[in-house]
Amino acid sequence: MDDCRFALLYGLAFLIATMPGDREFYEASSIVTAVKAEHPIPPSISTPGRPAIFCDLGVKLPFLYRYNRILVYGVVSGSEQDSIVATVKRVHHESHTRKVLVQFYEKENWKTWSDTSTGNHDGERGPENPTRQVWVN
Image (tube, rainbow, N blue to C red; front, side, top):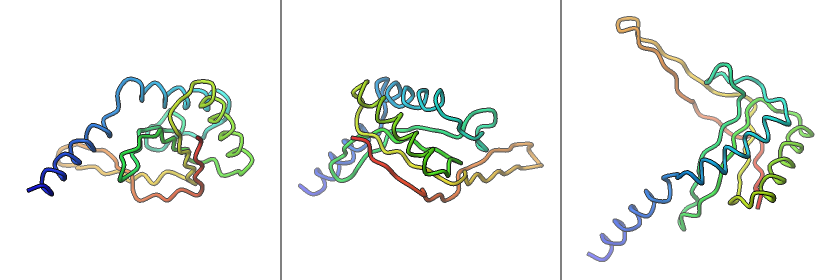
């Protein structure tokens, strides 16, 4: 019975840890805003008309440590990646944000689908592996 209670409490703690609040949205979006203002980011395939940079809240297991995750697509130059990381470090230091993981990807793996019988269409992200990851503490 104790194992069951522990699993239930851990599951509840995980759900709470993965639910972003206003602070998490503000922190991550302020980092993304600074990067977009200072660096050219290629256009997104998944979100046409917007740059291919996204953010979300990451949770590191098993202790449920929360961090901001920034995903950057299409920036392959090492020097430009270094410059983006420098911007993230500056904003992190100035704003005292939580730890940040910056992940660079060569391109978005976006798969679109459509159902001609209903007219519905959408897309989903396929498997992606970052070409570079940098932790900003």
